[in-house]
Image (cartoon, rainbow, N blue to C red; front, side, top):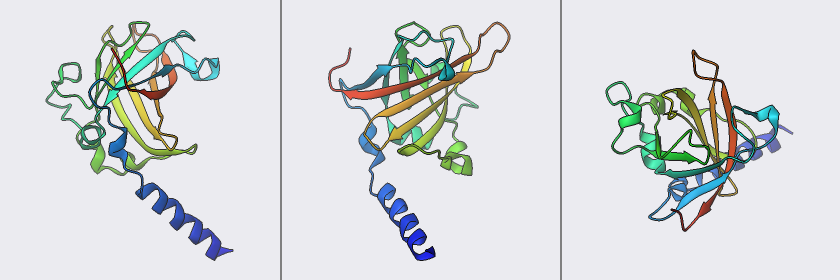
Length: 170
């Protein structure tokens, strides 16, 4: 039984190693697009019909940005940008801290067909900092989670967006 378990673990590691995460990066005119999951158990502060558009440079996301010296909302070359149909995000820069790829937290994983997860940040149009989790999926889609607790005048926010690659984006 232990031999089978070891074989399964090795197969899992090798199958993930063979996935080129750079293939998830969007090219000219491409984007990932999709709607928020409407279930209220995974949605707060986002209407059920809100759509998200994401452009991403996975290599840049993996490297991180020095958010200690560069304001997140002013990054010239962010790793990703998100926009939502409700206006909370409009070509909003998304970035991972420079230190995070060097910490074991960058290896966090949760089940469900994910190739890689990134813990990143963005700032809403109202100036509220949100945590953004970008998951590259085995089915070539991307899941984006945006989350923020109630802080001051900024209401709580939680949403899971399932995005598919589109070759013609505005």
